[in-house]
Length: 297
Image (cartoon, rainbow, N blue to C red; front, top):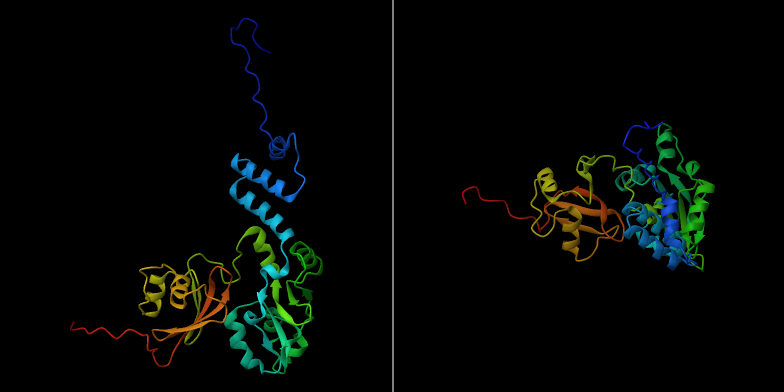
């Protein structure tokens, strides 16, 4: 209770901060949005007024985008799919499985259009102790979807079925490509790094006596120091930038380039960059390897 003899009036309580919902609601008066275009306009206004931070704005916008896109917009095309031939011996398949680093592989028999199922790498690892292992016993059923399936519907299906990969087919039943849950989620939250991206420092991983797996974001200086080569770094900073400059376009999965005694193969890529490369040291140096420096020079 205030002192009646005091000349100081009690200070009123500051108003409670408005909730995010209340602040967004104030932008909707007097005309609430009636379509996606108007919703986007409201989101842009909320972002401009600092009601939504940049990350929240990007995620909500991404969620709206998912409802507009189909599988054909984001799928990995058939020519870029990493697939396993079930007729090949497991010993021949293991280097390919190791180099690509995928957690799931479509498996085909005879023809690449004849996909018989999907192999999960974890299933294979758990079964490797069985010397009489038949890879056919590990194959799981494949999920086939049309190119026209909307991404929001696919995401719902992924969640309900607990599948993480689907094979995309065209109107004639031919294989068009594949799409994963990660591909869909990246439309909402941005790039999701895979299992090899658990460190911010190490970007080069040895996979064999003369083979390595390198992230596209590897700094040219670090790569040169690790391999004792001299990739140019005047116009680019990363391995992906150097490769794009060498081949003249954004690197695509499966593309290969030899330089300075090394063979570079793109094993992971999206529409913007090479994410992972397999690096193999050649037995004889490539013609593009720079000549050795003369110590007397």
